[in-house]
Structures are given as C-alpha cells and as structure tokens.
Image 1: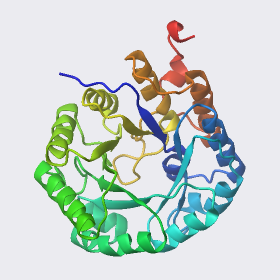
Image 2: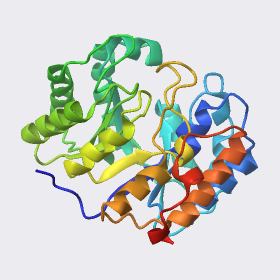
Image 3: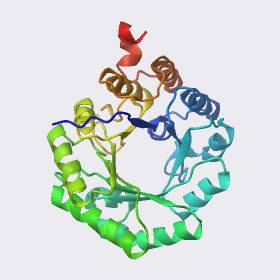
Length: 314
C-alpha cells in the first residue's frame, strides 16, 4: 500500500552540485542570475554554492561573491556546502546563508578514502569533533547525511546491514553528546538504487528510528531515477534533492557522459500529476531550466524543459 505525501518539498542543488560538475568556469554573474531565477519559482530551498578549496573545486572559487550577490527572497532557505571547519567559518561569516549543522558519512570505505582521504572509521571518529565545532559556532545540528547508501562503483554492493549499522552509530554518538538529528538524508551517490531496494532501506530505517525524518538525494546514472522517485513517494517521502535541468552528479560515479541528478522540473511535474502539492510554478521552473542549459552551454537531460507541460497544466 502506498502512503503518498500531500506535499513534497524539493531542495534545488543545481547552483551548487550542478555548476560544480562543469568543466568550463561559469561566470559569477551567470550563477547569480540562475539563483535569482530559481528564487522566483516557488522552491523552498536552494543550495547556492560550496565553501571548499578552489584548488580541488575551481568552479566554487567565487563562493563568497556568489553568496554576496544573489537576492534573498523571503520564505526561501539558502544553503551552502562545506567540508571542514574553515568552510563552515566562511559560510557563517557571509551572513546571508541559512547555516545548518550536517554530518556527511560515506558508507563505502573505498569511496570515502578517494573522496575525503579518510576511511569510514576515521570519518566516524571525527563526529565528536564536528559536533563540538557546531556547538562552539552556535550552529544547530540538523542532519546525518549517509552517502553511497545503496551501492558504490569502487566497493560494489553496500549491504543494508552496513547502512543500518552506520546510521545507528552516528545517532548514538549524537545522543551521547546531547544531539538529536532532525533527519537522515540517504544519498544514492553513484546511481545504484532500485525501487524495491529503496523501499526496503527506508522501511528498515523507519522501523528502527521512527522519530527520524528520512530525506533522499537520488541520481539517475543508470536510468532508475524517476522510478526511485515514484517508490519514494509511495513510501511517503516528502523531501527530495533535485537539480534544475538535471545538472551535475558525482564526477566519480560512472562514464563522464552519464546522467546524474534528477531534473527539478521533471520531478515537480510528476508530483503535480499525482496530486501532490509542491508550491512550484512549473512554467517559471521550465524557464529556469532553459536558462540553466543556456548558462552551461550544452544540452541538459531534463525532459519537461523540451517536451513542455501537458495542456491541462496551462
């Protein structure tokens, strides 16, 4: 039996994860223009940039300038990504962003070593330090992010038992330090999930941690993305990460031409077609998707931006 939510909240990650994926530097003014366009669509949350080393992520070298120049719209939450204390300090110093404490744990030991130069165990051992940083900086802890929760190109299948063990350990460390997470975000970092696997994973986490909200960050690397979204909606998942036009993905995931993120406009239309509210103006969202495609200078994978809306939506 399905348990469709009445309303779904989409967090737009295109200006961060999408632009980060591009090989040609996107001009600051163009990044800001897209963020401002997205702010007018009815989206409730937008990731605008990453405060990371420009040596490793050149596209984010202008993080401060992007954050300074976009126009905040009341009611929209503007987030940024950071990977260490220096990044957190930069994001917090900006003053325009909505800073929340996030832990990111990569379940795949092999990918963790490649992506962060730390083993899974080393990352878990650092959690108390992160929680101390958040407390010292008056940043409320919001999320336990579990990456490669469904599989990994470098390690292969990720057993559900391993995911559940990692979630349990993270929550227990938080509890021991007086921290209660608002949500668990599961990321299908390399596009391994299938609908039944997704349902089993969400159900298992809910059974063990019924007070935890579960959010999802899904990829379409192997064409399972929209099927997984449908399965998530059947499970009552009401918070999803998406990217305008389908920009971006994981640069380590698969062939360089493989699709990554799910297009915001496609997911929004699916929800609306199923009678699930999003609060989004689909026409404006399609305009933003076309602007994104113009900005990156190559075709994007979104379907609705090219196929248009069904007549009943006009």
